[in-house]
Image (cartoon, rainbow over the protein chains, first blue to last red):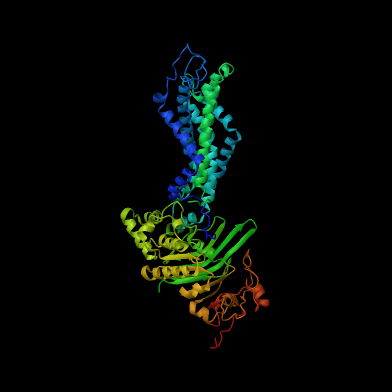
Length: 292
Length: 324
């Protein structure tokens, strides 16, 4: 079959939103990921209504119960229902996953645009980025959390900051690439101001790359929250978080392994689902694939 | 006719990693109102750089000398930005990539109308439809909601032209507007340029290496070679009596089945040299069959030649006496 193809469009036009959606729907793994993520978000929001027990209901008559019909995920050392705690724990995961990524985008995107567009800002922003990137993600997050003092807000802020350099990198790279394209030159020739160029021509074209970046960042943030809480730098007990549950489980790893297994599985399933969704999105947004 | 644009002694130097490059060397020309002036030459002769210098769109490593006057008023380099898109519009060579892929045609035209005429809402929409109609796009109402990837190359170039003339510019600079398009579409685009000239009185500075396009639409022609103007004439005069050996070579290189019965294509041997600084010689001497010692040691001036129009050559071709 001979097809006279257009030169490859470098970005997926937003106009193909419906097509992108169709591509995701046709990818079973992406649908699975999307389904699990939606379920997790719904459970997190409706935790007080869907959890079988209050997360802090102590029941000394049934400590360290293995999973059963009554307690699907078993109970912990003071008889709290692990399923209910995991459901409430998802709230911290979802909050950190979303808000820290929003924070990193809010700071990183403008900086990346400026660095990519104005050459003289580039060295400053890029050195800052390199400095932050020199620290491994978790070391940076843990360090920041240690300075700020443990709380959910701390987890959001420190993970958000730790993710800024990645966002700057992606945005700056896209800006550099887009700035050299013909339609930007054409807009300049048409008298467009820098603000118009950035807002109308560069940012909208960088969106698909940023969406992909965000789908990688969200599971990273969720794991980050679990790590910080595990280390006592994030959500504090008795508020449940998957990380807090894992920390509690340490002592009872022999007598009640389910205490560690179920929160751990929850994290694995959730981040796996996010990654599947992210892969699906990346494929759907890739304009080189010309499937309808 | 009144003079619209005057370039006087325009010089462009680039600082590159391999040293300086003199891309445009003392180029002067004028464009009258509602006139089509063609700037002709092979790749690398400085025609695009000249056009970019007129709009201040050159990269940072370029230094521009000389004077530009628009409608009698001198245009400083720092003021070019305010003129861009309003008095002087620019159409690029590549219609396939010159439109923003994520915005609809309507949004992109609307953006220009908002910027320069503060026109928005239904008024801008009406005007956009008018513009698309003017450049010969069928069903303009529907096209406004479409994205560039839904349009063909010719359509995109028409949209580019519609955006360029949205503010009734006095001068439209078209940098090889038809090069990326096939021949039938080319003819359509040239028709659009003709219409514009007739209906809104826009002057066109047409940059091209296609002499067919020049013959079709241009009033006057400036031939450039290695950054210099080497011949300057009305289109009929140039085609009748080319006096610079390079112009002659360009005309001979146009494929013509009648002339080249053997099917071979004529070419000018060699390529355009890169000029680093002002050369006291004819820059074409190395490729010219008529070149002698004078050509290699002294710079020729642009002076009236055998056919009456200016030519920069020590040994211009004689005008063929009535036999041509």
